Length: 148
Image 1: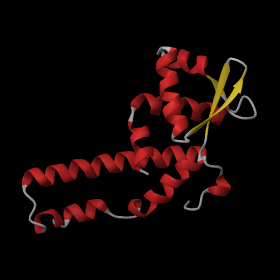
Image 2 (image 1 turned 180 degrees about the vertical axis):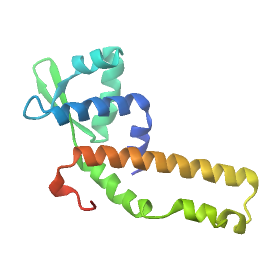
Image 3 (image 1 turned 120 degrees about the vertical axis):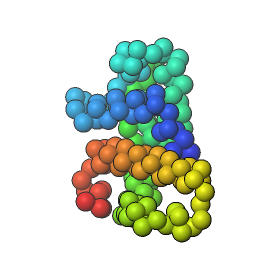
Image 4 (image 1 turned 45 degrees about the vertical axis):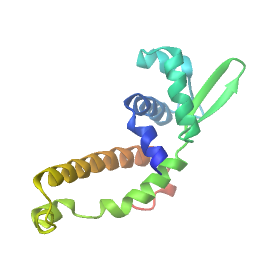
C-alpha cells in the first residue's frame, strides 16, 4: 500500500493520472488510451520526464501500456485504486472532527507540538483520501463500486 501512496504523492504523476482519467471519461477510442506525445503536449514537460513518471506509474500498476511500433499508448488501470479505496473506506466512516472536538488529544497528554503534528497528519490523510476516492469513483465502473 505504501508504494502506491508514494507514487500518487508526486504532483506530476497525479497530473498524468488526471489526464488519463479525462481520456478514460471521454473515451474517444475504445480503450481510453493516450500517447506519450499527447501527455507531453498537455503537461508542457520534456518527453524523458514524462516517460520517467509513466514508468513509475506502470511499475505501480496504476497504468497499462500498449506498444505499437515506436509508439506507446497508456490507459488507467483502476484495480490498484480499488485496493486503496477498500483500505480507506473504514477510515472515511470515522468522525475525525468529533474526536478533535471532544479533546481526545488533550486527554492523551500530547504536547502542543505533537498535537499540531498529529493534526497536520490527519489533514494530509483526509486530503489524500478524498482525492483517491474521487479518482476511484470516476474510474471504477458502477458494477464494481460496493460502497455508494
